[in-house]
Image 1 (cartoon, rainbow, N blue to C red):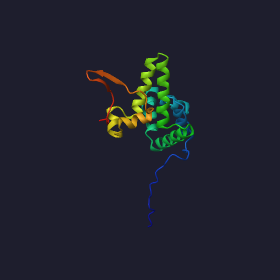
Image 2: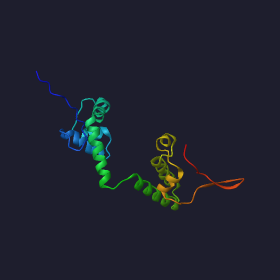
Image 3: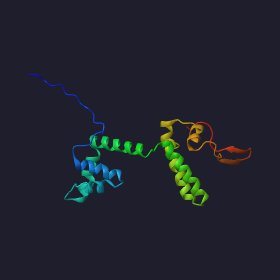
Image 4: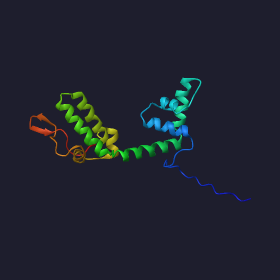
Length: 164
């Protein structure tokens, strides 16, 4: 008896899935719909809404082929829109400055918070990135006025050195 060798070929998401409903589910997620709404609008049905919410959407989103297809389509969308981490940081910086100039300090702080997240300024991200403050400032706008604190010895940079 001849045994066929079994090769596991990992799906990279570049080709459409066989299920039209799964493709519709992915497209709905890319449109920004919550998982349950994306599930319903793709044509899936369930008798008990709470069971459908918890089990069925989880089953789809934990499917490796769906994960791969979703990741692939997100990457393609980002390419088409020319979205990069650097472009996002620059855009958020522009929004922060504009909001601050208009007295919208909460919006400015929110944009700065997103910049900090993208640049890895939070402790969880710092261990992963290890960027120096000079590298981070280069991404967010270079030689913008450095925040300072007043002290007995005069003005001292609030941010200096390498992040922990």
